[in-house]
Length: 438
Ligand code: HAM
View 1 (tube, helix red, strand yellow):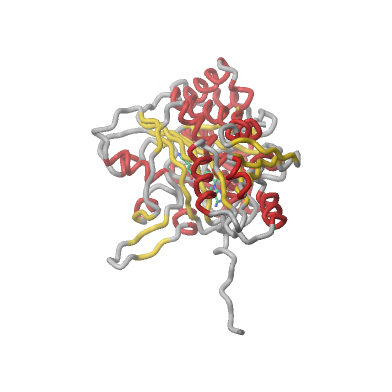
View 2: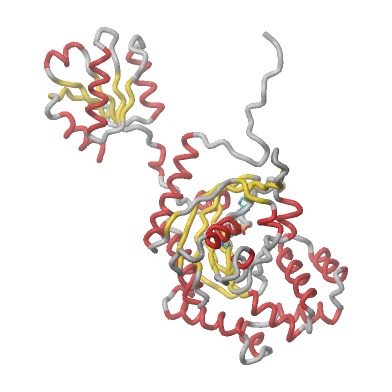
């Protein structure tokens, strides 16, 4: 023998999904689908490869310079593996802008790749549920998206004490920077980047970032004051016609009137890294200190469709990642124990019984809607077959030997109760269903 073998581990920051992992992922994504579809959202999909330019325009420097996987294809086109879904959906909406009926409510579940340093809550490949509304500028769409998030969390049994939804508004932030700090537009951009990163860097790095980017010591002092101010105090510094103030006030009063406000809070430091956000922005965090990265985030983007079309169509939505959410479910004990079940029935086999009888029985069970496996090696000892059934978690095993065929019967065994019965072929399906239900 000798020689070197290939590595069995997947590429750094990506995961293999063994059947038990798929069961978990399918379980939570199908629950999410149910909630989102109840709100009338329709599913869309897109390609994994996109033109690099799609992200270069508005996704923000960090994503474009550091996190995008990109390459040239054989026709010299510069391509990127999608690091997020929003530019794809904006492109798709723009491409059919005259045919679509707005407001649109769309969702997708897609895998994305980002070249990040793998760490708790951050990998290089993750899956994201994206939910977006297009063509409605008013805060009713913002409210719908936020209430949908609360319903999504409730569908998993998450109560308000397990997470918090922090909300702000880019227009409001810009107004405060302009009116209070007297910041120029380029300075506002720099400050927003530093504030967005503040929780991930040291206080010294944050202050150096501001100073090195030309933010004066007086402005930094004002910024500190701004962070120590309440929402009402900040509103009082802004002109009466501030759109940011109106949007935030309108949104919070709707959330209050509907009782959703107990899950939501205003947080001036929420900005989001992408350059395309223009209005409401929000992030959802686990309250457990073990899971520090955001569960999901999103916001309103007014100008993204404008990259592709003269017509302006505003969008608002969020991306909900599977990595931090899985941690959240585990930390709060929200994963049901019975996700482990595989097929419902195993058919044990005997060497002296014609194999066609097993094929018929298996087909009969499938027609009755009962998933089943035939034990393929008919020469295997019954002990071995039953050990396999136990390891795979089959709740019921069906035996069919020469005697049962002669008698027009089968033997069924309830694995957990260690109980077994001979039942006629006419009655066994009903009995089995009863057992499987219990
Ligand atoms: P994002 O904040 O970059 O937003 O990602 C949304 C969520 O995806 C995060 O809160 C996190 O749960 C998850 N996520 C992001 N990167 C990673 C990673 N490297 N590993 C694991 N999970 C990750 C967006 O992508 C926006 N396009 C969302 C959006 C939709 N905005 C409007 N519509």
